[in-house]
Image (cartoon, rainbow, N blue to C red):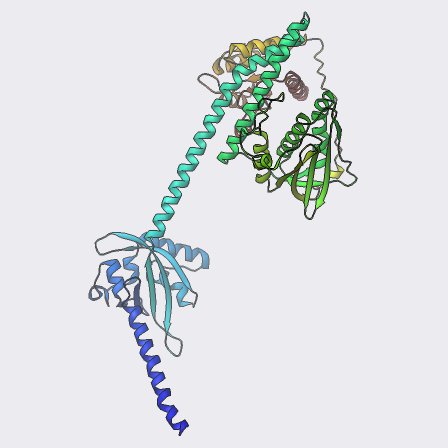
Length: 552
């Protein structure tokens, strides 16, 4: 009894399933949101649903048994698809429906983007899925194309691309402004610091009062330069234009350089410093220049804000896959409230009225640089006990063959010209800069300097006099220094002369561009006298080497 009564229930369930299946099929075919087009095996449209009518503007009667789907697609895109398939498969594929249906005919799922052309000749982007329809033996009896309007997504993509282009343009404009502003600030600062250095080391020796005045000028000038550099660094980082090159960096080498720079400052304040000894070479993946910048900033702060006769110790430890560098000081420490404000721009945590000068930017730049190098930074502090700032970078192995390369310091270059004076040409339009460099050159009996106020005169003089080294400003009136340098490089008579860029443009992107263009070296203003003279000697040695190797 129970078994007999179950049969009607099964039949009713089957009928319900079939009914639901029919309803589902009907819903799909009458959907207004999707175009559903079915063709026969030759690609002639056999079914054109309500959604296709709404999207394309044709009635089913106008297209069924009349046209192929390729007739309502952009013909150039269909041709491009055929060409791409021909290249991919190494088999000629003719433009038309064959190109649209090729993959589907080989039972490969195919979804592509093409442009539909409507009855009124308007167009819209669509995403189309095409599937081969087969009978029971597996023969292709037609194709099913399901499409959807892609206009909204394309519009969002277009708006996003336009926004990104606008942002990139704004960043470029900001970078150009920063480069220009840096140049405008550095140019007068070059004269201030340059002439102050001349007075400091000039003859007759300055009096005690004069030396104090000169010291104040130099102190304020170098501080202003530090402020310019840090503001420029922060702006470049914020605009996303700072360039980094992550590579294996030897901590031993970087520590040695940092120690040489910071220890004199610490010694003058009675601050003791200890650095780690590297029994095992330790390398991190980071940008060498920026790692050094970060460490110098942390070490300098630990010295500046320490107590008299305090100490600074640097420690290095391996923390999982990271190398942690800690800078520990015996300063006054920081309160929890101060720690919360530590990385805010221009916030000196109430130290504005103290004896130590600062910009309130250094730690912000440090944190951003560490983040850009995929590192991390942190701080722990106890009031009246001191602070420890730490940074972490990913540990890595030594670069190939690095251990086999000796890193011995070269002696200062000595250029022997048989008692004759070396000739230099300085192309510069700023009279103060010309006067400064002229006085520096005049202190050396083996050098003689010519000058030119613009690039055109500089090129003419270089061709006529063939100086051994050329100093070239970048921002010259009329023709720029980079263009002038390229002209001299292209001239066989002057191509061998080393050309040093001497410019107030200190943006890394500008320096890289100049070096890639062909400059022998790049010196930023304000000039550090020792660095300038060293670069000049290296260029003179190069010029002498080239001259000796030239055929008689």
